[in-house]
Picture 1 (cartoon, protein in one colour):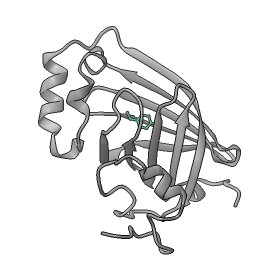
Picture 2 (cartoon, protein in one colour; picture 1 turned 45 degrees about the vertical axis):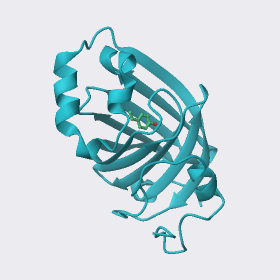
Picture 3 (cartoon, protein in one colour; picture 1 turned 60 degrees about the vertical axis):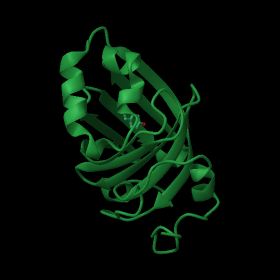
Picture 4 (cartoon, protein in one colour; picture 1 turned 45 degrees about the horizontal axis):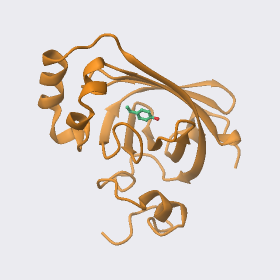
Length: 176
Ligand SMILES: C=Cc1ccc(O)cc1
């Protein structure tokens, strides 16, 4: 199916691997909310639900997503799903680069720690990571589906999802 309007993009679940090897999983939960899990890279193991974001259509089939996190990390993503390509820029504060372990958690349960850490440690210079990525999976999860990102990442999870072993046909999580 071709993507054209924002409505086509909202409710879509993606897995992609950045050209630097970092693997991410990301869900356009609704027109102002995103969920994600990080499977590879500097902060592998981190996962987040209900991050407020700005999501727009740039032109037919091209979508831009931007947000700022409790850690002070800023993110800008551009999706070209029909080409199985996206581009992401992550703007990490210095402290996340120096202490990535602090951010590797289910962030929703540790918001005060993120806010304390961004005050306690240094912000600058920021560490910019601009990378293209290859989209390896596109799933039509529907909007506000709490099953899409509902547990911590585990080794082999993205292979299970791609193999159709993780979600049933109505896009609910199997083996709960
Ligand atoms: C820091 C979060 C984040 C989430 C998705 C993505 O592609 C890049 C960064």
